[in-house]
Image 1 (cartoon, one colour):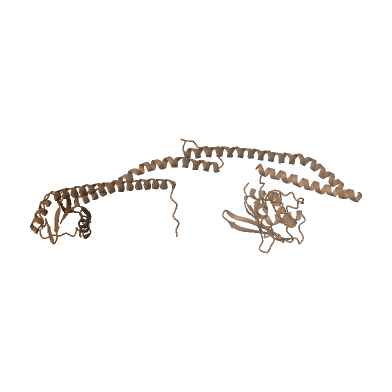
Image 2: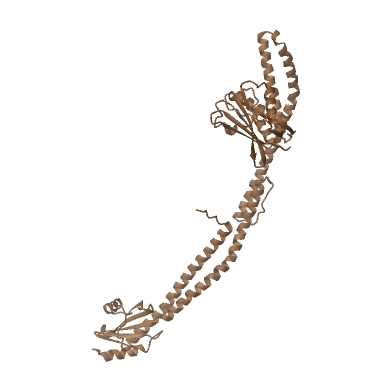
Length: 481
């Protein structure tokens, strides 16, 4: 099923405003209708009841009553109907008469109304509908006489049936007027709804644009604060947060610049004395055979540690150039297979520890020196931390922006632990925390990744399906400086 797109904030605000306006209008109309209807019906009802009761009380009754006497009283009562002309019915024993000849009884006079009047001897009324659905008010009044200081029933009961068609039309007219006024009222309510939505959405839009600028690095972004409501408080909070973030980022940038400058300065300062130390240790290494065993051992240790320190200094200087964005590409057109062979020959990796799959006639435009560093670091890392044989495979594949150069370096070791994979290219990261000393500087893979990125490529680390770590280099055949 297709997912329905969520409504925007403006639409929801206008809908909520109109919903509240509609509920208010309907509630007000319903209450007004109820009160007006009750008032109209009560006025008609009270007038009819009081008029019929007064007219019956004014009549003189000579008991026993015959049909002619009851008919006379009914006709006389029928002449005084209020507020509308009514139909009078008289009942006395078995006598049934009315102001309408031929219809001595009526269906709107219910047995329940008769029972109430006869049992209690007081005036009762009902609002009923006839078979056609027309509303009627039926009032029943018993005829009473004074006898020996008390009131006694004559047994005669007179009923008045008052049509409520006029009141029904009045009520229906009120309903129609409410319906006709509801639509224009809701249409008019759209105007304040739009104004309210605009007043709410304007600061929200300003905040969205400010957040977008902040996300793009414009840390000096601020929002103009208007008013003193909740949205103004939110804008002030945003400005305070942006100000604190700008200050924190500036402090971090300053600290990063100082750290880079320190690493660069230290590396430069160490480079000259290290060059002298390496020259001295090389001379001493040549004479180590004529020294005693302990002195020769100490000399070899100093020579090895000096070499490690020299490698670390060179790696730090290289990293500092990447951090300062001072690293550049010196591109040349090279044969990839020949470049791989030269890298392996320079480091004497030409024995059975290395297996290569190098197709001919694969040429790429890249920086030979940096490509040599990348391949040497990957193969050296595989030999040190993985296991022989190490397989180097060169291949090409079509890409979105042209042909890509793919180089896989796979070892035969135990592979990379899952918890280590996310940090494999981090600087100074050690897979084995207990191994505090190693032959490498801990920057090899980080420098390798930076060199690959400089060529516009990517470097991925994973575990092969048969075990062992696999590093995949993916870069364009035509790098751009």
